[in-house]
Structures are given as C-alpha cells and as structure tokens.
Image 1 (cartoon, helix red, strand yellow):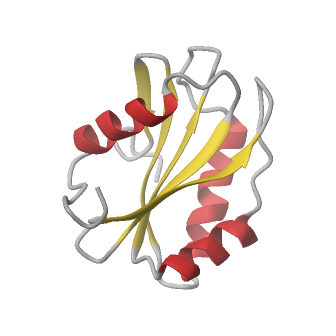
Image 2 (image 1 turned 180 degrees about the vertical axis):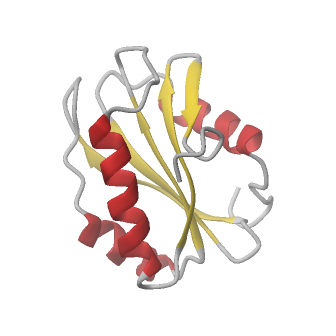
Amino acid sequence: VYRSKAMSTPHAVRDYLKLRLVSLEHEEFHVLWLDAQNRVIAFDALFTGTITQTAIYPREVVKAGLAHNAAAVVLAHNHPSGIPEPSAADRLLTQELKSALALVDIRVLDHFIVAGDLSTSFAERGLL
C-alpha cells in the first residue's frame, strides 16, 4: 500500500482499518501516516493495552510522525467490546494529539474507532 493509493475518503480508510484491527482481542492504538497527497507512508501499531484501555503518549506519536516525515495522519484504535462509541477519554486524547502534531505541521485528518464490523469516524461526526 506504500504510497500507491491515496486515502482520500473516510470509506477507504474505514475499509483499510477494519482489515487490520477487527480481529484484535485487546486494545491497540495505530497510526496511518500519510504524505502530502494522503498516500500511505506507513501503518504503525504504537501502543498495546488491555481489553478495556491503552495508554497513549503524545510525545511518542510526534516522534514517530517526524521519523516518517509525515504530512498528515489518521489515528485509529479498536474497542474489543464491539461498541464503537468514543469515550470522553477518546475525545480528549484526540484533541491532545491534534494539538501536539500541529506543532510539527502534521495534520490529523481523522480518528477511527473499530469495533467488530462497526466503526466510528471522528471527522464524520464533527469531533475534530
């Protein structure tokens, strides 16, 4: 997938993320790094947690973005519970990461929560 296709719609990103995250039995936080044309540079699993939570460190996300020389990012994590609703912590984390990444000119395009066959896009819900 590396720089071969632009992730230009939430639907394209959703399909890609479902393939990668749907079968996980514990929470994981992943980042889809994109170039200036929204083509995939890399897909990193940055943090792994338990069945109900994952600790995420903005500093480490920023470091990874700089290492990939990314222009944009799509954040993603799974909810093994099967419920894709964003929690208050998910919303707060998204805003913290958006602010931290903006300092180094990396745009946050979306944050997806994948839960089985269901998923939620923060951008589609106006949460970004």
